[in-house]
Image (cartoon, protein in one colour):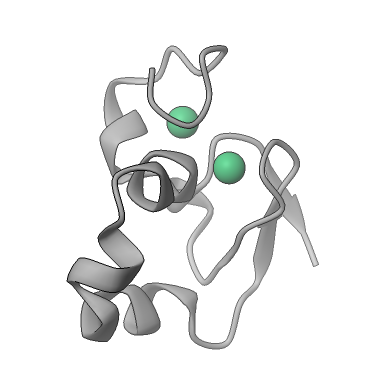
Length: 62
Ligand SMILES: [Zn+2]
Ligand SMILES: [Zn+2]
C-alpha cells in the first residue's frame, strides 16, 4: 500500500502515510490542514502528525 506496505487497515487510504504518498497535502492543502491542526497523535511509521488517531497507521499519543 502507498506510503506503508505494512498497514492492512481498510482505512489506509485515509491515513497520513497514504495521503502524503499521493500528494494530498499539495492537492488539498485546506483539508490536509484541518486534519493536521492541533495534532494529538503522531504516526510511528512516517512521523506525520494528525488530530485524529484514525488518520494514522500507527498512532502514538503526543
Ligand atoms: Zn504514517
Ligand atoms: Zn495505514
